[in-house]
Image (tube, rainbow, N blue to C red; front, side, top):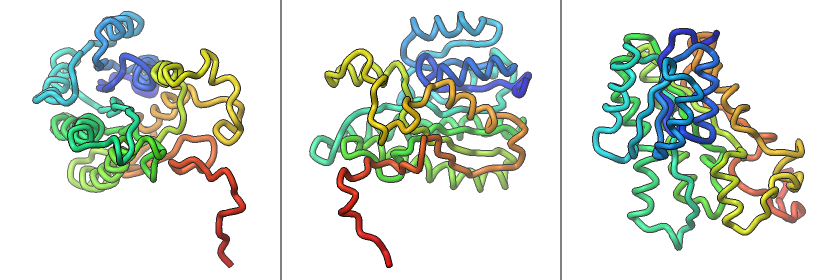
Length: 266
């Protein structure tokens, strides 16, 4: 039981990667605050985890004061707070032509500012427990797909936040801050999005090797398994680190189709 008696907030945990992380946390002995926007899904997650192990908080992360309310949900129900997993994010297609100020600010409000505010709200309690923060980013943080402009930039900012606070909070508060950048993960949302793009129901079963050298893409449970190390005491004093969980060094951008055009250094 690597997380025995720990209390953990997992944002965006009514579905996808967050749900998988919440389930794995409880399996490792933790109590969790399940968070999201889908109340019906959230209730199903809590029922699956057991009401003695989980409590549900439904609220938009861009709402004023939501971070403080999430923290108080953990304290009121479980008496302490050991870790925060900033997983919730808006994944929305956009490029320079389709991204206006309002859209950019909306993406940043949830993907970057909300995680910062949750860390800030949780910090007194995390300091007391010598706890930790795990931010869930994306390989798109490095440059990003052409049609994921705002999302990619928000994840790049989150990565800088992790590096910065991973140093300062570790030194000043004894709180570790680390990040996982997943690659392509087969979540429920990703499955539905690809169907909306006109792909077949089983689109993920026959992918080009450039996208899935192993023959398949990553499962949420595999991201959750990696998350436990960073939430557990076994990761020791390590802080300010960002780890990519992808099938090969695929730093946020599709490779050119004609590799002969890539210049080589001499």
